[in-house]
Length: 365
Image 1 (tube, rainbow, N blue to C red):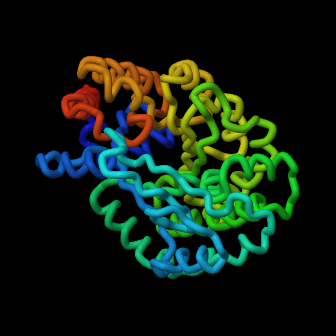
Image 2 (cartoon, rainbow, N blue to C red; image 1 turned 90 degrees about the vertical axis):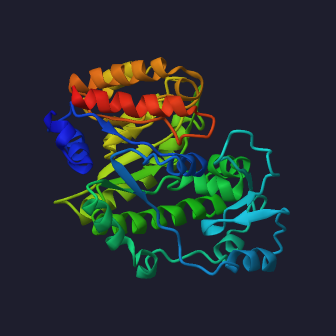
């Protein structure tokens, strides 16, 4: 058995990301709850080198229900409210088909022009240590199991802002560029939240912090590169600067997630300190070309298509894709083999088995 197969998952991942062992085959597998439950019921352990952590604010269950009612904001029936006041419509039973994590959003702050009404809502204070009281123990437990700890902070600022305010109002506010608009206040709030959570993750010793906002579509950027550079890039940069300044000797790796084709801003992400780009969707960009263009400055995480290969390909298609990516890793490119997104219930069991087996085969050499 070769050295990389014998290494612990965490050692293997850190070796790849540092460039000390780029040819190692790292693997991440993030199933939706139905897939996880099906695997565990069948006695199949969930594979992968990484375990994920989340920080959700400590708040009473009804605090946002009451706040929205007091503010005269009517919510749809039925609905659920998740962290920081985000509202989702509850779909009818069976209406989601094979999807698991997709929900229709309701934008409670759409149409509100007075930023004071937004500021008056019960926003959690993420500087309060109460939100992080179990974090250190969770990271230590992950490391004892030999895995790498991933601190999830995706939807860092832009996505949560438009989830609450609605994309149309967000873009109108950004075009008018009024610093006092509700959108600017929300972007600043979620930037501050992200800084506090990121610093807590770093203090707890996570190996990778996952920032990100979906800023791409499958035909290009969701917002213009100029608008992104004016409003999102400086705030994202401030989060990364805070992490680097607080932990210069042992900073965690910074992963940035965005679906879609975001090639116009990859160089910007490198400039502000992103270490890892996730994902590279073969459905909308040339994976190998991006890896060869930026591989001297970036690691890449998630290249196996969840829109094509995994749900609709054959096991041989899956094995072929893993083999191709492992070949790029052996050339020295820093890759974490993974699906491009969470694995939905429409992925056949035989393709999951082929994925896991192909990774193990590549590790054995």
